[in-house]
Image (cartoon, rainbow, N blue to C red; front, side):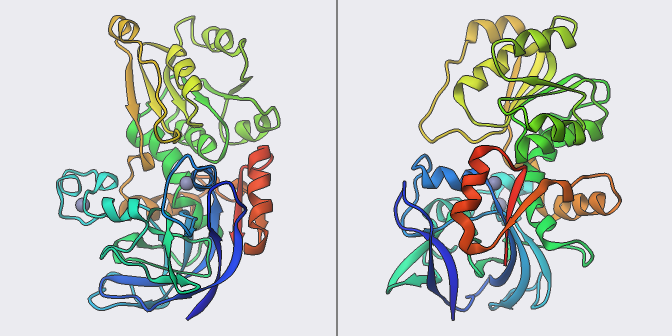
Length: 366
Ligand SMILES: [Zn+2]
Ligand SMILES: [Zn+2]
């Protein structure tokens, strides 16, 4: 079968809309007709060469759609099911899956890094050569073939553009606040970066009953939307922000600080904004190979905790439906996240908008 897809043939080049061949799903695989794909910064890391993958590649890892066909042995979904895609399929059998940490599942990791299916091959080809996929999904395309374990069935009554965001930004942000950091009522929270992920950390902290919730961003146009998502205070991210955080937290720093951008210098600033005994949660993806200066002398004396949060420590099969239930009940704001919709052939413009910081989340709709 042929389809339209946005492919990247080399870093530092625009996405190209091309006709790509997509094969039938093999055993254990599912072919999904995409309805919506979120425009996330993690894909941009591939464009910028900060995340290395084989090329040509189809990016896109935050998506929802409808199952079109299934390969042999697939039992958890069938044609016609509405699904949100997980970019970390979990086997249910390995050490991490059996210890409640499916986002750390070992079984699919080498293939996710190699940009292939679980058997090491590709279902996609262009001009006779294989096309790779970004972190097991590759949904900047009309169809994807993914492992069965990437497909999470969802309720019938939620829009698929909203359901797509649960596949990355919502889980990463809300999960970081509720599951990784376990923010509690009355705790003070500071969030660096009020983009798609940062806004979801803010609404996760608000759900937990945190106060104050301080949003810090370099883009003052984000302040209003940060308040809409539950920030009680907003600070412009410059040298004065630290004093602002101190003033709002009794001079100690925040109980919980989150860094959602992935900038190493900001991670160091965020550690400084964490009170002694408090917790810094690193959520933003840093460029591969980058590092920070880990100030052991300070961390030891102040008993600060630094935690990594991947995919919000969620359990996709439990939490994607849960977050969509919360949305349906009015507890989570998801409609407000989708600030711009684009066609697939507008993907380069969609990324240009994301980079200006003018949008909470852009979504490609098919
Ligand atoms: Zn993402
Ligand atoms: Zn596993």
